[in-house]
Length: 541
Image 1 (cartoon, rainbow, N blue to C red):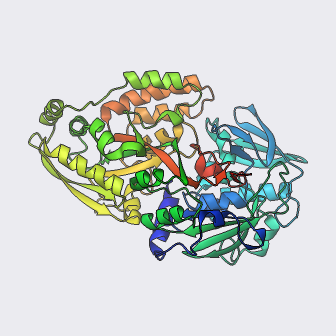
Image 2: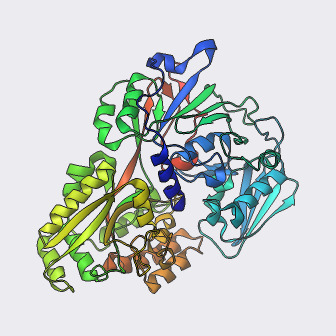
Image 3: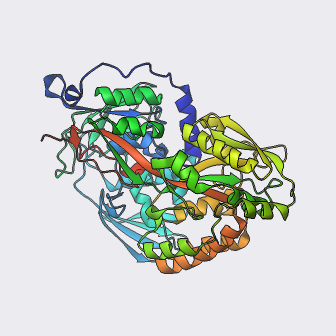
């Protein structure tokens, strides 16, 4: 999730590994504690970045912040936009959106949410001085103004196919202006906290250990039947310890299920694993700015040389769905999945063939093979994929040295923050991943292929640049008609698949684990924005 991820991962390395998970309690005791207080405990694999929706842009901060603050819109379980703090919305022309804000919403301290709070929150996130991790989402905004007692009007510079999603992310979350003004010096920290309209209220944050929230007695949405009185997030970086905590009942839920321990978890009849096709992909990026990877023949040779079916069956398994040459799976096919399914069948493929691989290499600038380095993270699944790549490429005369990096180091390289003496990305190949910010195909295509994202801090890990591709991607981003957008994207992908700047391995399946004593949670692809615990109930209720 762009630059925010690097800070998150650095924070993860800074926390102290827990040797245990806190008090030892049985699964039956995890739901109810003394005094009738029902406690639900969530295990995170690293600490949060900040208690602030403007900086909630990762897989551990968001599950916490999403309980305290809410957006104008939300994603439902089908990844569809639904009302939240805004009761309705409409696009009145190609660049104008009008939102009707609810007039009956209170913050958790009982004070009413006003239009001034709404405008303050949105403009604060948009302001470059805030340096919000989601501030870029307001890049097309000309103005956000109050045009009625409870009406907000947004004007864009130009038409945008993806603006409609923004207020369902943390970019659309509302905070109390009065609370922020009172806590400017420590807002979002353990001492300053966060005040929002959500179903839970911030109580405490012990860095590297836990965050504690309690039920909001002033929650505005009276249709919500909240059964959880206390919500505890425990920081448990070590995979085995986290799984042991789930098995013992010391923890009731984790969004960070260790993929290499799925069999162990699924064998426990007290636990349920929910998996959903994510909006992401795992890829091998070729540094197209560095020889010999600036030669398409080399990239094609490598693509033919790797047996994807075997890696899927023997390495990735249930952790992901086998990828095609497309940068996205079915979760991003939108409202016209049949069009994408048809295109995926006809798109250029690089089926495993050592003969074709050798033929492509023979036409390249390095016909006799070469040596190179492959960067990967210390995540076991990624490392095992790297070992398979190394073995396959050896068969066509390419000697691959695997360089295993810590997560924070890997992130610096992936986003071009680690450069060589020439100011270019400092790697030959990198095994990495990407996940779209919203359920739209542009969420993967634009970040990975636009040349404007190839520089320092950019998401284009292949440093790929093709002006025709840029023009097609930028043109589709201004259209609201999905069929017309897809035609342009198919043209762009035809060009991209010949250039093959990336090799896609799988579309990860996001796996969460929950104690079977609870029900009401359904995993979906937009989970980073809509992982809520207000709907969790005891299974026996």
